Figure 1: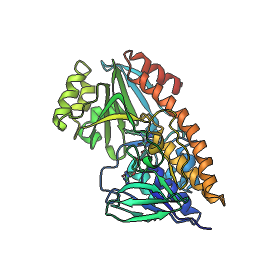
Figure 2: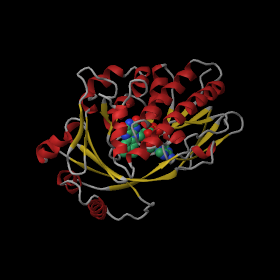
Figure 3: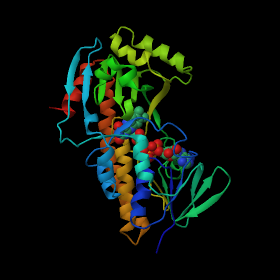
Figure 4: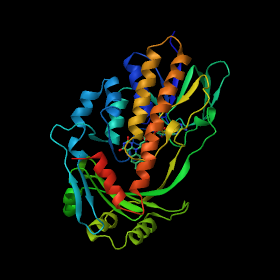
Length: 367
Ligand SMILES: Cc1cc2nc3c(=O)[nH]c(=O)nc-3n(C[C@H](O)[C@H](O)[C@H](O)COP(=O)(O)OP(=O)(O)OC[C@H]3O[C@@H](n4cnc5c(N)ncnc54)[C@H](O)[C@@H]3O)c2cc1C
């Protein structure tokens, strides 16, 4: 029997889920809040790990295309002291393919392929029918029943309340984001400083990271410990407060903030490390909706792995509910492990002792 399946959210997790099912000839209805694929800037570069994101792309039959457009050289990492001294300068070997980078927009287009997405259809809530399925309620007032509804709708998931009362909590760390365009021609000194991959500098309870995307685009992240600020001001006010916060750091590092375009303020929220729920027939979650964690290179990878795994277990079973239960157990165990690793990582990267951040780098990048 072919089941009626819906996924809420066309991010990396939802699209991987739909794409793997599509590969097996199964149809999925994809509800996406955004009006179209280019409705908002897609965000920065992602590194896809061999055993997670790349594994999921393989299950979707997309690994060769990924290899053709990803940037293995983007794995390079340079760490500076706050005075600009280079502390570490790591370059991947020519054949190193453990964590190549890909722009988020390129990954989305790769996963989208010819999938049929219902753009501009924000879901307001999902309600179990009590007979094994669930009803999707859309903002336009329409509603539709499915045998399985998969909430892949990110940190502020509207699907989550159907299975869990838990909401994300502030970590005590805020990220401020800005970006530079055409860095090689407009800011050649900064381009050389950043190199092919990422640059990071750590101070007391704060850090600055610059990551090269394709096409000379660079994303800059400033992160720092601070009470939750719900009115940080406009972009220029945020820039000024960042220049004050990082006052005394090397001019070259401050140039990343001085030359940045629009500034956005993003407090980092997480779900509890061991977030699980009592199984509800007809509804499940994957990706950030299920296990939101600090942005330390795991979230998109896990969301994609979840998507691929759930899709394959659905294809390989006659009992949909059994497949979903077994998937949840596997996802919870994997997510708890990564949530623990990334929570500890955030503590070390945004730490009263900046040496803790450099030591973490040495542990994960020993060469
Ligand atoms: C600064 C930063 C850097 C990061 N770097 C990395 C990295 O290098 N590697 C990595 O693995 N992870 C990284 N992450 C984490 C990663 O971005 C997330 O974990 C990942 O995007 C989660 O994927 P998802 O599909 O679960 O959710 P999302 O990417 O959040 O996608 C959710 C989708 O659902 C849609 N949606 C939301 N609500 C609704 C609704 N009500 N109705 C319909 N649609 C809805 C949204 O529009 C969106 O398209 C980073 C995160 C940040 C913030």
